[in-house]
Image (cartoon, rainbow, N blue to C red; front, side, top):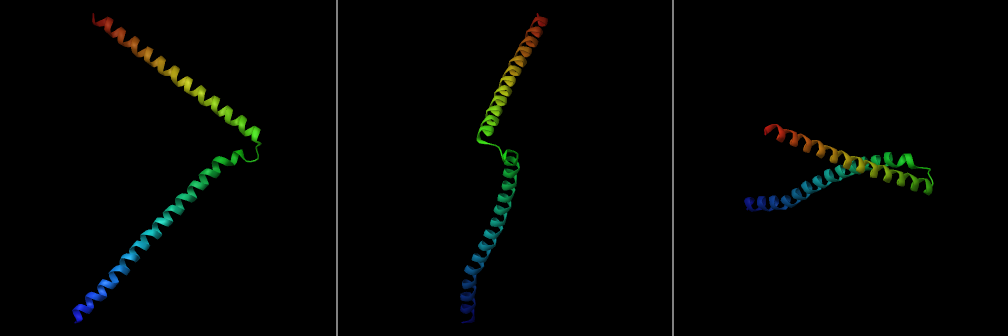
Length: 100
């Protein structure tokens, strides 16, 4: 009888223990998510801070300028790739000429 009672008590506590374990995991996850959210909010604030107080027109101008810079950078990268390819081809032609 004591054995059955002991099993019954253990079975009853097993669910409670499992729930407590799950609760602890959930609390840890919630703390991690809160920490991540705080970090992301700080990052967002640091990025948006310089633009506070600007008019819509000023923001539009800044965004257009950024787009121009981006396009210029892409064109520069493309030119550099073309130049590197030309250099590579010249070197390979030069080596081919030496081998003959």
